[in-house]
Image (cartoon, rainbow, N blue to C red; front, side, top):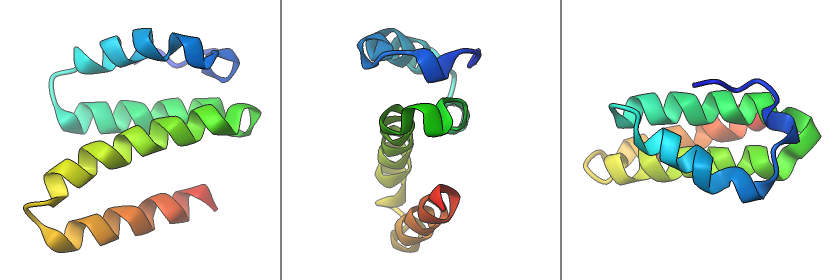
Length: 83
């Protein structure tokens, strides 16, 4: 997914970004794209970066219901990444 210039994106463009994410072939691809988007937004737009990470967490959380330990691991990984 193209992420150039994402740090200047406004939250108004989230709908278009979410449409592109929905078109990706798998949850794994969506999570990877969301992490890339969060990294591109970086410290210039922390609120947008956290929105992308929260969306990624929601995808992982849905899948983690089947694997109880996975949710705590994914939460810990996100916290570590934000440091």
